[in-house]
Length: 631
Image (cartoon, rainbow, N blue to C red; front, side, top):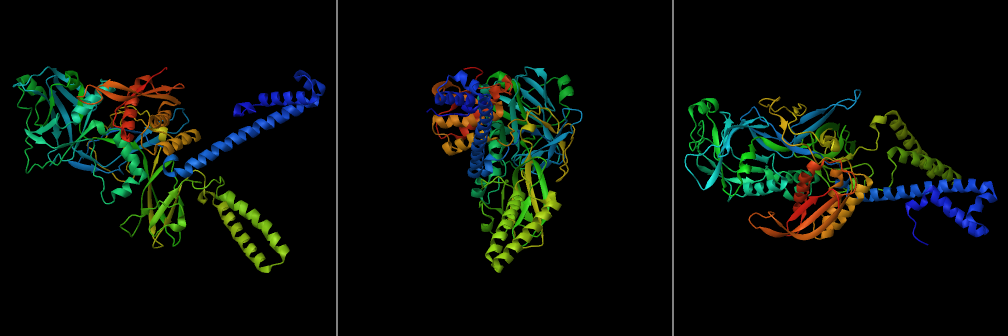
């Protein structure tokens, strides 16, 4: 007998097989089975209906088992949503501000229908960002003079030639800086091209981040620079941070934008370095009308020297900005609880989906509580905590209320059994347990808001002292809802945690890129794909099958449909700077359904997947990812 699938247990298929078996037993033709007795048809219909429901229940059970298995094996990653992210611009009112991760900005999303309420989508810096009360006002190159007005870039003059020819081409940044700005040390610079293809931009970024080809100067003194967005990571326990899921999430989002940032190194302050201001660079000569029109103020001029091999179109379309940093959709929630001597259990309630716990501390201790990787609350050390979503670690689907009801019914039955034995001690113990469970059940019924509910994660805390206040901070996110906020959208500053004064909140707080990458909690099929990926790849890509599994898990949340993947070895040009044609891995992806992502964004998504694969790859070959509509 052939193996039966779920499609073989539809009502029609079951009824068809029952008629064939009945005809074989009764030695009748199939068409004559129901004619023999009208009751036969009714019985077959009833049996087929029940068998179909049973098959659906078995399939649902299989899905639930996989769901529980995935949640148990990978509880901290698989059960969590993923926040959307983008590049954000903010100019502070202070001369220098190290903006912490707890700073909150929000976008008010209006309801689609008239009766729907608006939703506030919160964003915060991925890592601590250094901001200065300064901005790029002008960009000067051989291709012309450009003015930076908000997120707009306006050409003022065409074709400006320097006074002396050089073997390099320079880009001058005229920075309007606050008089109190003492240093440019560790300041990130954001670089972008709006009208270039993703493949071209990848080559340009490699040239810009190559310190041997791109050199930065301030008043003819070379500046130390670092590729990427550098943040002041705490170095007290680097191993603990590598095991921290929140740190890994922040690092993965930061890797999405590390290619488009340059961070200035350790630069001395004004007292020991030349920070002289001037209207325009000495290497250019402007007419009197131009000077009166554009260069009435003294500016701080940074010079970027690039080789002549960079196309003039790249210089002409380049944008370089200050005060830009990656942000992610997450809302900081705070709650205060009164500690008890024994284990303390609290529900982490929030409007959005839970993301991660930021920190736990008490009112008297200066050291935050440590998160424990243990799954048994009885093994927790003092001043430590653990958290888990509802049901993780067990296959029982019942919540606390249902379990108490089950225990209550069981105790009633057992009390009758022990009473029949005539043992007074057993009867007293069972009666006492029955009363305690009944009292607990009554309290839960009287206070439904304080009971354990499905959907909220829970934190288990074991304090060293009791009767003091405990402060819990955790992040929540909107997931897929925060996707698609267009570039140029202005955000407001939320004053819940603390206010950081900005120069102009209406003009200086805006997104430079569209928010992408947000996804909700994974469904059962998505968990199955993630479980297969984690068990097969171990977060490292070694074989072509690993690459296929990674792409099948990466694209569905972004395209909205399943994909087919093909990996072949080949040759390509421009993947490695200055190497010509090189061997590579061609990764071709085809959507199997109707994608929700616009075709104009496919190239950018392919480039993001390329960087994602490269960050996890154990191979020396570069990748070339292509997203095609048809195979």
